[in-house]
Image (cartoon, rainbow, N blue to C red; front, side):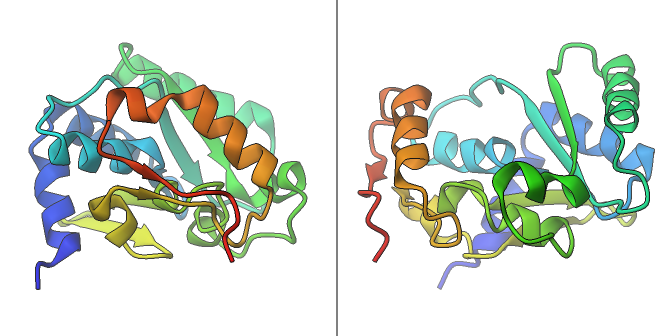
Length: 186
């Protein structure tokens, strides 16, 4: 059986822009950080569709710091990242405060927050460890990403939000092999 973590690492490591992003975020030394969502998901889907890496709309940097939940701190980190890589649209969010926006109980850490995002294949993140190894978080595994299945997260049971995101993102136009599951996650 193929090791999907290793396969995902190979895909990420082959993309110089993604590796630059990971190096830039690692240099900030943020607590409990990952680059998440489309950063990992799209790389896998591009690979499976034999596409060059599609441009990233944004790069979602998440970290977890319950001692400083200020928006100014997030903006400061985004500014530092923009100085390093100005061609990247950085989105930096402290997950210690994001549970309020999503009406969830407080998250325990970044991995817990990522595990509660809308679609299962979006619930993925990666960080570059000090030994230059990639470390992944994927609460539901990477199988959905590699099988091209898109389904609603059972921990985010809001079908209307899921359906709207599927319409807005137009993923099937870019990745036609995707299998979009209905929002009844039962």
